[in-house]
Image (cartoon, rainbow, N blue to C red; front, top):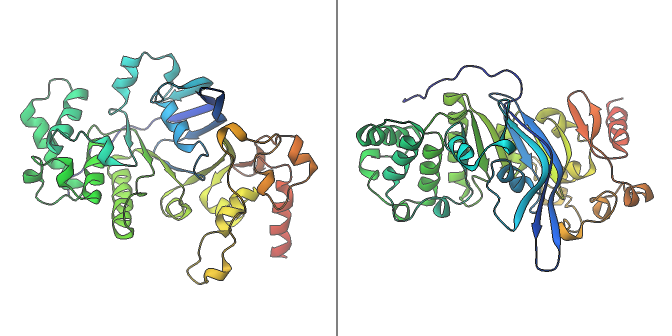
Length: 342
């Protein structure tokens, strides 16, 4: 199998997002889509970022890379990549990072790929853009190598084809090939399997696992699917209404969630040894960004909510080794687990 270049180790967090606030201006009001969110990603680590639609998980990542366009804007916060403050970079410097050391796999490759350029030309362009002096011949050879790596059959022939000639799964493979063309240090995958059928989803997840192993890249996996996180991630960040409400090691979070929202997400998952009657859906719906209630945003849906929750917003505090929860009563969830073990 074709392999990709391994990189020297990076010391400290590779990516650090802190206190990020993102707003979108409307005709009548400005809404806050991300409200003080943050997380870190270590070199070689896979971080799962989960939450329902509107939680801010995709906006956080897009804002960190300078990809939010008006009427959206980053109000405050800090984004540091390998020691460099991305907020202090010029647009040109950011473009140099994107597609190079930082790459992104988008949810819908049909809209991310250029419909009037062949797939091979697009991958080759990504190579030449970030590798000065690379000839068209070498870029084409690299494109064929990458398509072969991601499992596109007859790669040489398919270099000449256009995105509409690829199936949905093959377009996502081409998108991944383009993302890893320059051996990135960080790969951000935004709902990479949402638009695919179950069989193709499994193949794409295997491919993401392969690229992590082959490149050594850290990965931020943005998804609403906790099953995907359980399969691929080392740590998990749970977001709700624009804020991080819990984070920690995947095993610890899945075994003993310390936030009612996380527990609700897990209880709504079907179990292989259970039946549909075992599912407990979370009541209600997440608030829209402009209608987040005071106090804890999850309080209207929370079975543990009390008066304090409706007036005082809980801060993210330590809830165990290497983990944190934004719940006033996370210790009660921990107590339930202790009682169950006795």
